[in-house]
Every structure is written in C-alpha cells, then in structure tokens.
Image (cartoon, rainbow, N blue to C red; front, side, top):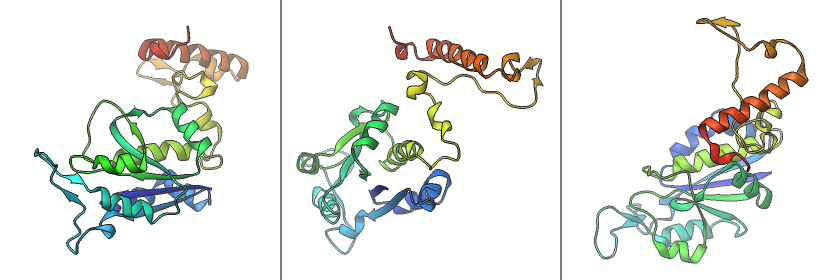
Amino acid sequence: MLHITFITIHPAMIEAYRQLAIFKRAEEKGLARIRVLALRDFAVDRHGTVDGRPCGGGEGMVLRADCLGAAVDSLGGEETLILPSARGRAWSDSGARELLATSKNLVFICGRFGGVDQRFIDRYQPQEISLGDFIVSGGELPALTMVDTLLRLVPGVLGHEESSQLDSFSPALGGCLEFPLYTKPRELWDLGVPRVLMSGDHREIAKWREQQSAQVTAKFRPDLLKE
C-alpha cells in the first residue's frame, strides 16, 4: 500500500481534494492511505505561530525549521520527504514512476509564505521537486498534482488499467505525447472521425495512433523525440 502524508497549514485544502475522484477511489480500494498533518499542531506558541521574519530583512515570512522538524519527527522515520520547490528537479512521468518504485511512504512538505528555513532542508534533506518555472502561493497545489500523478500509476486505482499505459509520456508511447482522441458524433462541424478508427481493424488503429503520436510530439514537444 502507498502511504502519503501532507504537512500543511491548510489541511482543509487537502481534505477537500481527498474526497474527490482518484484520491477517494485509491483509499476506498485500500490501495493508498492518505494522512494530513496540520503544521500548526506543532506551533511554538498558543497562537499557532509556525513562521517568522527572514533574517537579514526582506518581505514575506519564512516557515520555521523547528516546527517543520517536529512534524516530520512525529512520523515513523522511514519516509521519503518531498518539498515542492522552484529550484527543484523537474517533475515528470519517469520521475513519478521511479519514485513509486523506490518508496511507498511519501511525505509532502507544503511550503507557504516566502519559503522554508534552509536549516530544515539541510538537516532533513527532502527531495526538492518543481512543476515548472513559475511560482504559486504554496506547496499544496504542486503536492496534490504530484500525488495525483502517482496514484494514477498504482495498479488497480484506475477503472481501466490501460488508461495510464497510453497517457502522454508513458513508456508504451515511447515517452511521446498521446495521439488525438475522438468520440460521438461521427460528423461535427464538417469534421469527421478518421475512418481508420471506425474500421474495427485493431492493427491499423494501433499503427495510426503510433503515427499520430509521433506527429503530435514533433509539433508540440520535439525535444521528446529520440534521435
């Protein structure tokens, strides 16, 4: 079973998403256990203080290392720590698969305000991971996105296992982008569903999808194509 813990000052954000879609399904099927730790439960005073002014001056507040450390120390000690961070390595499908293969006990540190006291990072050595070259208000949304990625890869979570196998970036597509998708009606706005998809010839359909995947990748992400 995959064990996932979020450490956050906004537990309601995580709990709300936990009741939806893939998160709920994973827990109901007993394939994942999701826990939310409220960082303010580890505050330094009765006011729930978990942050402070940056040393040396500057705007914003910084999450305190002692509060974060106390939250992590309350766990079992065998967890892999993940810190969403703009300076981290890029998140990817291959990275998600590697993480899932190497650890079944993940803790996501959801930063807020101006950042996290470097001493927490130095002592606990979390894996810093970035979703891209942009900034959001906290680590909750990036953490939820990463966990969504991971849960889709857990066998049995999705209604149809092949759903994730043919997603963009999957090994089955050679790391390329997914082919175009169609549904009813067959004719719409003078545009029709490609005839091959209605042929019932699965070999030809597979060949078409492979060709289309390569074309879409060449158009939008040529860097993914192998030399």
